[in-house]
Every structure is written in C-alpha cells, then in structure tokens.
Image 1 (tube, rainbow, N blue to C red):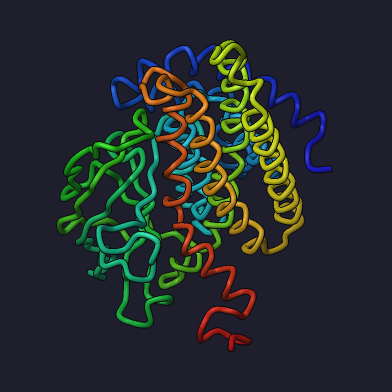
Image 2 (tube, one colour):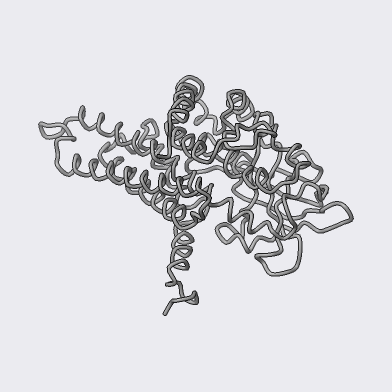
Length: 387
C-alpha cells in the first residue's frame, strides 16, 4: 500500500492549509496575474511542506517519494492551476537533482533556504528554440578558471520573476549533445541576469512565467550540481519525478470540476428538466470519473515502483500523457454542459479549461511522451526493434 496513517496526518494538515491560506486568495491572485511566492512558501516551509522527501541534514523530513506524490495530489484541490504548479517547481522540479547529486557545499547554500521557503527557486531548461527538445539548448557556460561565464536565454520559466535562484541547464562543453551539459545553481541577483518580461499567458494566470537573459554571468564552478557533462542525464532522471508529480496534481483538480459540473447541471433547467437528467450528460460525467480513477491507479503504481528504486520512465511518461489528454477532454466536455456560463471567466470550469491545457505542453509535449514510449516499445523509426 502506497499511503499510510502517517501520510494521512500530513494530508489533513495540508488540506487545512489549502482551505485557510490558499483558496480564499486564489481569485485575487488570478486577477493580479501573480501570487506572493515568498510569503506563501515561507508559510509552507515553516510547516515542513517544501521538504518532505529532502535530506534531513539540509532541513528536509527525509521521507520517501510517496509523501511528495501525496502532496501533489492534495495540491490539486487548490482552485487554480498556477499556484500548485509553482509549488511543484519548488519541490519537485528545481530541487531534486540538487538534493540527489549536489555537493554538500552547494546543497548547504541552496537547499535549506528552498526547503524553509526563504528562497524561491525556478528551473531553467526551456529556451525559445528548445522546449521539449532539451538536447538542443544553446545557453553556454564557458569555463574561465574557477568560474563559469554564462550567456544565453531561457523561456517559459515558472516563478521566474520572483525566484532567488535558478537551476540552470547549460552547455559546458563541445561534445555530444547528451554529454556536454551541466546543471548549475545561479543566483538570480547575479550581475548579468535579466528578467526580460513576465509572459502574458492564456491560463495559469496566478503563476508568474518569465523570459530570462544571461549576459556574461559569472558563477563559481562549485555551484555546479554533480559532475560536469552529466546535466542532461540528471535532468532526465528529474523528469521522472516532475512528470509523475504533474500527473498527480491533476487528479483532485479533475474531480473538482466534475463535482462542480454536477452541481451546476443539477440546478440548471432546460426544456422542463435539469441538464443533468439528460443521459448524455450524466453518462459522460460517469465516464470522466472512471478515467480519473484509472489515472490515479497508474500514478499510484508508478509511485510504488519509484519508492522501490525502480526506473519508472515508462509509467511516468504514460501518466503525464494521459493526464494532459484527460484534462483537455474532461474540461471541454464539462464546459459544454455549463453552456454560456462556461464561456465566461467567472466560472471554475473556464479556469480549469485554460489551466489544464498546459499539461499537454509543459514538461514535455504529448508528442514527446509518445516518442519516448514508442522508443521503449521498439516502434519508433530508427529505434531497436522497429520495422
């Protein structure tokens, strides 16, 4: 069994925190196109939520990944997608490689304040010309004595306008593209780091997303995570947790929209009966609830295997793919049943419709997930076993 009574204790505390400290402010943050990351993360850090599965010696709780997965699922109860995404970047996208592969020196500098909420972190992988194609990034970190000198730019960086440091993937050599990259912790206050703009997005409105430029940014080599040239490998390992986290965060969000749609269609009358009484509506909602439960089973299975130390690339990829596609189908179907109200910005279903669309893009597009799976199945042209 993946979850225990210990998980339930933390789950109840997190549910209470979301109900009291997050959801009452979501509408305000959505209108402002940003949420106060330092204020919120400090509150979460003081309660231990930002370091559940991080090492005890650096301020974490030292628990296994099942606790992070439980937290991701509960964050889906936040009534928007932007805030849980920002939290997930802090806990399961910017910091796992640091916690796992970083030297004690670099971990002491960046991990404890990220776990306590004193630092806001972001992850710098995507670029204008390299999103899902991670190997094609152009940002360079040139060796200069004991330092790296960084030039380039990053795009679509969640938490980017508020972050204190960025976990940056950059080319540190001229070798093969899968062996010439390194992950480097770069303080955002470093000379030459410029937040060029906050992006105006279709959804995830309360999450700040930035374009960032690096102009001869000098950082000490001690800020590198692990071995030079291993950054691509570390990022791919990190993607397992990131994609599984992203899928888990969809579960309660999907269920919330189903519940809201049931309530709305039960009370909305058309042609002498409630919208919900139409078989096409209540059958479709039952199908969607079934799909959510199937996704939950897949995520839990992957979580069990990850905790057991197994490679879950295949299952995490499937979960990420399914979560994105289910989010698109579910919110589209539910929005239809809200009629004209579904097309207004004042309803939860329209927010979910906009926010959920990112799941099929961020962290690797659906098409990349399919490429990964086909390669593992031996059906991708040019891969072993394909025709």
